Length: 241
Image (cartoon, rainbow, N blue to C red; front, side, top):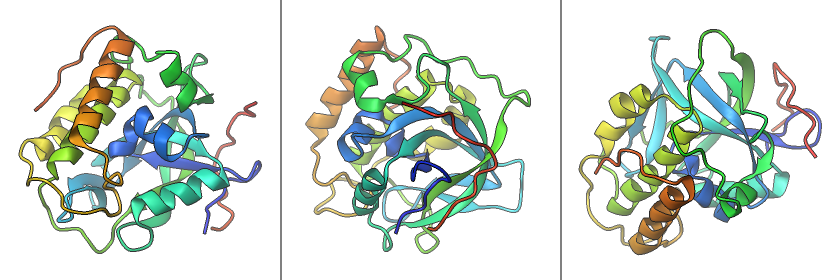
């Protein structure tokens, strides 16, 4: 089942885990388009007992999760559901975020095109969260069942790091990353034996290490590498070609 935006039959998807990585989104959702970043208040990032990223609801509205937003076709969303293990590993919910549109150079571009052109910014994007965001309803994949703290699989640490480097270059707060995400990635729990939602379908460590190197090369340098129904948006996405 898809959760579609009003107009165009497309979803606005909020990514906060390994799907922060354009390379992974290009593999899973080749027609996805990057539209900006967002902040989800009243939730907290975690690695759950399955070894993958999750967000859990908290009563403190000062807590938040930062992420990137993609525009997905119905086919992309169906493929992403399969990759994420919906409805067992994750469930799809509609949540409100504060949305910050991407710069004109990146707004609405296919992630495959961004990768192909090596177009990631060389340095981390400058954040401007001083009330300039707009409220938006987005589709979020989360688990209401697997909410116990856990350690990530080793290969997932690598994929998360790839995603964090992309996210930082697209304007996500370095403070958020260092305080709320990377502490969860310091110690892995070994090699995963089989497939499953959020696991990348058997992608090897070497493949993701190569991808991590490539995103650094494309950007011209390295950042710090720590080892369905009719969603009614509160804003309207630009008409993209």
